[in-house]
Every structure is written in structure tokens, then in C-alpha cells.
Amino acid sequence: MSRLWLYLGILLTCSDVSAALGVVIVIAYFWNDIKNELRNPQKPTTEKMNFNIDSMSENLREKLR
Image 1 (cartoon, helix red, strand yellow):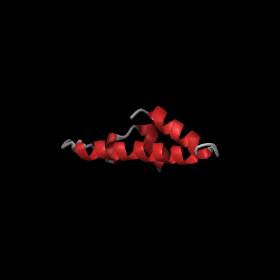
Image 2 (tube, helix red, strand yellow; image 1 turned 120 degrees about the horizontal axis):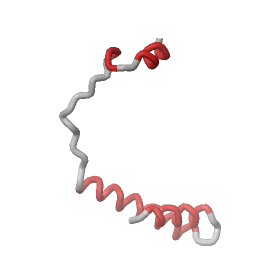
Image 3 (cartoon, one colour; image 1 turned 135 degrees about the horizontal axis):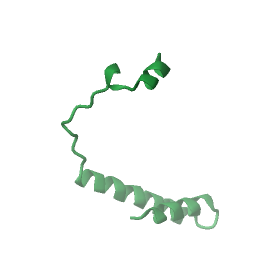
């Protein structure tokens, strides 16, 4: 589902006209998003990043001290 449905659901939820419909749209948006994430989980990378003090620039090191 596109983000348009999310924004429309939030708009309807905040308005008094059709708050129930807005809640249903927002729940359907998040339900679909969670379902898609469970079907296609992200795989962690095996690359290790070097985050030690030597990999930083001189300016950043001075700011952190």
C-alpha cells in the first residue's frame, strides 16, 4: 500500500467525520507493512565496519575529546 493510504487514514482518524474508517485504513496499512516484512526479512551483512578512533578524521576526533 502506498503512503497515500496512511496519510488519508490519519486525516480521517483525526477528523470527526469518519474516524472509524480512518482507523480501519491505518490498521490495514500497518497490517500490510508487517505482513510484507515477515515474508521478506532483511538479511544482515557479513561485512564488519571499522569504527575505531583511527578511522575517524582529525576534526571529528578533536570534537569528540
